[in-house]
Length: 242
Image (cartoon, rainbow, N blue to C red; front, side, top):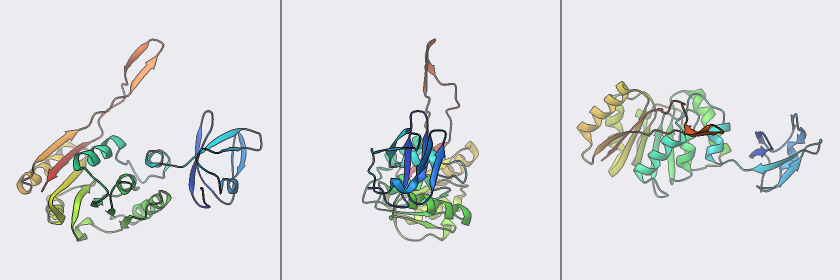
């Protein structure tokens, strides 16, 4: 059941809107809706505007938060986040350290799977935004730390970094991992990737692999079907095991 303050998505015939249930009203060319009328509704219920236009109610999941949540920059794409989850075998027993939180997109995905996520963001304004997005996702197992990841301590099954990475970050990540744990980095450029690879090859005896995950949509028109011409590269993932 939707409570006051919950995020919802109203899905119409052509558009969808990311709103918060509670006081106030929302208006579009389809008419107005009292946001308080959303409280007590269930996902899949319908609500009408004062003009009689109907919207279906959807509760956001991580892909919706990726699309609609407020951003502090360019987040990791779902395809890359999925590779992190797949290649580490992230599961409900894992303690995960994430750094370079940004707007919290990766942390939200991880929080829906892992037992606990500690995410570090050195920029205070980004950390505050991430906390709001994570709260909207109703995740109480994701903790935002507004500080440098080099200050992190503890023991983790997985360490994931999406930030400017130096050798000292790789060394510190290695010191936090349990034996058999995974270290993963997302880097957009070759030069940054080489820093990670060289450091990992010195430290990790369980194997080091680097991947580029390519994703191309299919475009289908009356003329025919072909891969989209949109740029498919986003970044490189380096996966190392202790």
